[in-house]
Image 1 (cartoon, one colour):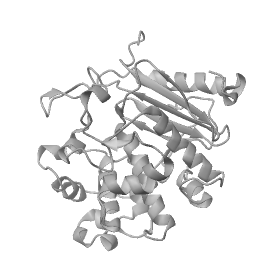
Image 2: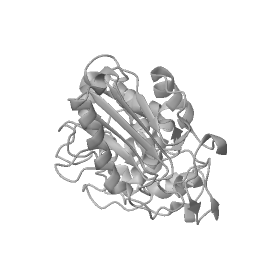
Image 3: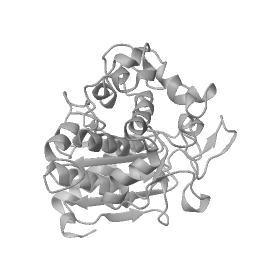
Image 4: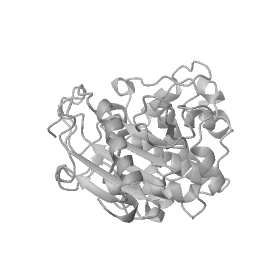
Length: 325
């Protein structure tokens, strides 16, 4: 783009139960959606909860006896989902562990009390917990619980063919350009499959996940009962994380200034986002590869709120809900 924000990007907007309207700077392809993986995995967890297979207030130690004696064993699933377990935000687990050993390395990380710290490590553990509870591996579980029921055919764990996706820069750890495999180093060390990162998707399917949650909140079907969906997307304080989702801050939110107070969403390190405004009944997805050729390009931070304000003006003033561009 001329602004130098990202080389390639796609956006999708859906109002209510209408199909997403898509705009792209390049032919439709898959994007590495980075931490947007978390909201797909959170949807799986809430589906398990809705069926009575998971108690969010159970400790990890009770659900996962192998963690006995570790600090994280005392933390609840709810604490990990809301990023209040005290786990570190990030550690270079890939430097000393690979495969399933990455999960146990995350479990051995020290906790720092029940204070809010956005943590990749918590979702590494939650992804593994999904597998333990269900007896299925994460890709199959995600397909059965979310992707197939909601009709999201593009969403998948990598690797994907290089001609299906966009490059995401050079990885120092792997000492090569990255295209078709996950950008995140810890997820790469796990074979590309984790609860915190690893998914690739087209923008319309990310937008459809937001619309599905909106349907649940409005009690119009969707993947979850309305009461659970509303709880999962409501934070205990403005700007804090809800149960697998982020919420908007009164000032300085990447969702801009025009989305409503009940808005929920999430960001992805590669330059991706999904925000849903239940009051305007709108879901807005943005997928980019802003990390190419270098992750040091932070222009996305100013672009995101401006982009969302532009979209919301169209939704609120120009009749986008009627299908106009």
